[in-house]
Every structure is written in C-alpha cells, then in structure tokens.
Image (cartoon, rainbow, N blue to C red; front, side, top):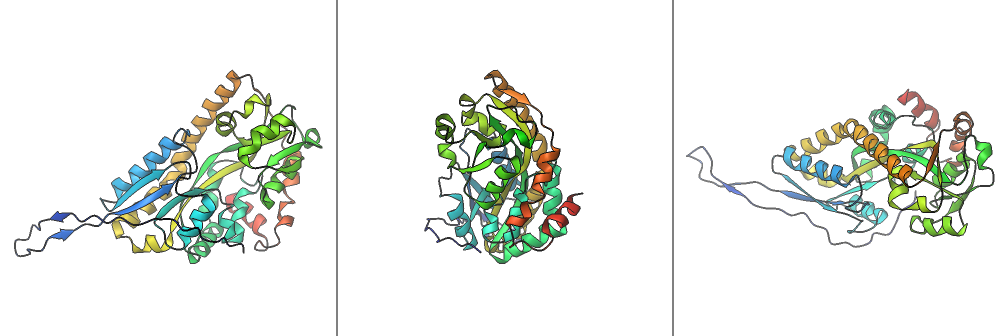
Length: 333
C-alpha cells in the first residue's frame, strides 16, 4: 500500500469561547461554547461552476452544527496538493479535502473500484455503492487509517474530446488518449480503445495542440473551462465514467467533536448525494450549450463494445478483494 511523506503544513483548530448566563440562578458559572474550524481545501478555483455548491455545503454544516463548526474554503488547493493533504488528514489535521476516490486507494486498495469505467451507469449508483455493505466496509477500513468519508457525490460524466466521430471502439484504434499516470487511468484509456498517453493535466492543452495526444477525456465543464475545445472540434458522449467526488476529514477530529457537530456532518453528508445529482445535471446542460456555441459537435456512441472491454479492468488490480467488481455490480443493481 503506497504511502507518501507528510508535507508539514500549518493547520490548526480554532476554539472560540462564548460566555452565556445560565437560566438557573443557582448556577453562577459561565457556559462555554467551543467552535472548531475546518479548513476545506478545494481543488477547483473560486470560478469553478461547483464552487457555489460547496459554499452552500459549508454553510449547511455551520448552521446545522448549532454554532459548533466553522468551515473556511481554500480554493485552488491553496493549503497544499490533495495527496499531501489527505496524508495530513490521516495524521489528525482539521481539514476537509475533496478528491476522487483514486487518492483513497493509497490507503484502502479497493477504493479505486469507484473509478472503474462503465461500472456506474447513472449518478445515483454512486450513493448506492457508498451506502452498500461493500462501500461501508471500505469506509470502515479507511477510518482505521485515520480518514473519514463525509460524503460521496456525483461530479459529472466524462466524455471523449477528439477530431474523430467515435461510435465504437474500432474508431479509437491507435488514438493517443491523454490520461493521468496511474494504473486505473491507463485502464480507462485502454477501455476506450486507445493508447494511454501520460500527461499532467496542466500540459493537456499543449499536448493536444502539438499532437503529443490525439484526445482527452473529462466532464463537459472541465473541457470548457480548460479551453480544450480550442484544440479539437468533437465530443463523443462516451460517458465512460460517472465520476465521484469524495469529501474526507480526519476520523480523530470527527471523534473529538461535540454531538451537535457530528450530527451535522453525518446529516449533511448523507443528504448531499441526492441533492448534488440535479445540480450537476444542470451544470452539464449549461456547459454542453457553451461548447456547442464554440462550435463543438456532439455525437452519441454505441456502448456495447466499450462496456465489454471494461469487464477486463479487474485483471490490472490483483490487490483488490476477490470478486470486488462482480460484488459491486450486484450492490448497485
């Protein structure tokens, strides 16, 4: 299991004392209410279309905690990169971090199943998987590593940007598909039928422009905000990944909170997946229109050949629990 060196960051819990008088005149002691500040290290910028949704999430946590929580949002990973921050969280830092589940597989191998192409067909499958016996078993194992999942929500379907009308896997033979340098992302590109091309996201625009990569995949909002539509003119609606965002925090910090704060985290986290589906679908519709206005042509695919290829992905993960893919399919069905 892969571990990373902890990068030292200055993070702390802020406690504010608030004085109040008791209604019982026989009790002259002043009461104290402690407020824990959670720093939310958000990957996207404050111009990201989901940023207002996370502001609402932070506000809900504060309001429902009855004054015991304060949540501060730090956009653009301004506290540190996701990998380092999750390691810091596992050591007890009072931080909320958004991440895709591939980061969690550094602690519990099975979490990369959430990134399995064509496993989830609809956004509701994410909540079903998280709340299933398998998902809760994985969550408990993660808590033993010091990390608690607050929520797991829909981030958007990922589609393929290229100059080619992709309808079946035959259309992507020899296509260099940009992906992050991990085993699962390589398997995503292989499932799509192309050749994995490892490139940092920050270099994707130049890779597409210069022919280092022929295609890239991402949610529509990200394809637009990164201006990748300037390099290619077609999006094939592969929908190969119903993408998940998880919010994680320190399990030790959670256990140290008063009941009001724990209840707020539990309730808001549990309610968010269903609420977020409608919000993200609205964003997807908005950004499809924006991309069409920029001249992008959309086309549907015939999914059968892609789904068939995805059934071999488990072979690349011998570290998974035996039968994980089949059991998760049953859990979401």
